[in-house]
Image (spheres, rainbow, N blue to C red):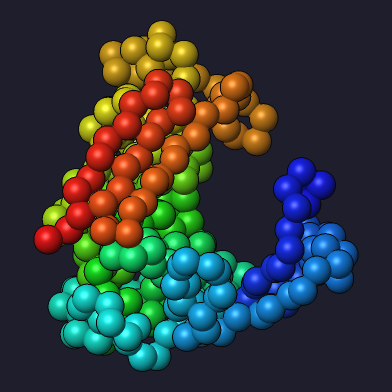
Length: 272
């Protein structure tokens, strides 16, 4: 569906799926049809993805993690003091989220991190005992802000100033994920795709930084202590039209985030 709407010239992925369920098999078949029509690259940690004007480094892929510091990145290669302070988790041995391809992208002095759906214990494998990524300006929350991901061993080590939470009303946006961001050194703001019912009024960002909100009367009822309204199809609220968040970065390291719903934009000066 995406390739019918948006031309794709090259695909990058972590390789074959490790789960063998019917939905994943159907996806693999559809994806293989796309991959036959354009060049395909299976990435490994440490690979550079060629993209004009940008430096893109793969840091995780196919259940493997970056083993050496990213050259020139501030803080890369230093011991991660958060390691050992976060409890490990017993995760399913087979979960294709473990294989997520993640990357750091640099534009001049601006750096952003996207780890896909990488899971809690795999994040620890990537970030311990050393932080090979360094610090970043912007962090896309891992796994929609679910509490299966977004460990402090990542967030508190890379020290993002701003996070974009790619959550739904009921998927992601976990209280634990918000608390991890709120307690991260130097953290300033979280922006959200949707109001999160699990997080409630205590942790959701101010409305100006949330792209999609339920009806005002529903939000007011929640603030007053009422139960959340029933979800729409797929467990999510129906937000039509859908709104988005836009990040505009500059080579000096400064950037802005804009909310298409209300036109609100905030500027962030370059890190000193």
